[in-house]
Image (tube, rainbow, N blue to C red; front, side, top):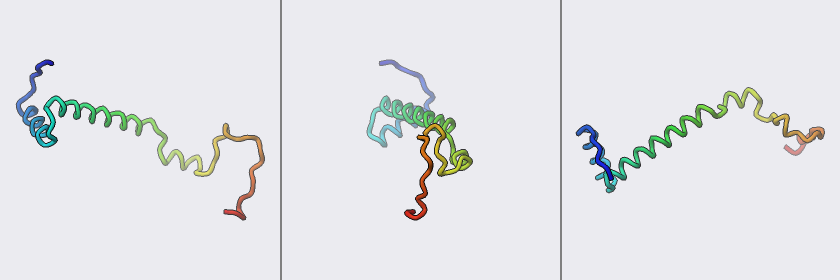
Length: 80
């Protein structure tokens, strides 16, 4: 265990949140840190993932060229 100094307003905010959730202040701090880390993770995911605009530029039904097996495409228009 250790002691940290925080502004009174922050301490009061943590106390209110901890009381509301019926947890200790330490647990509330851990929850806040975990929530911040998860938010950071998903921001990074959104930043690095291909967005819908990029997918539509490629065409929704286009198959990745590396996934082709060398066979001619079949006509499924009578089934679909």
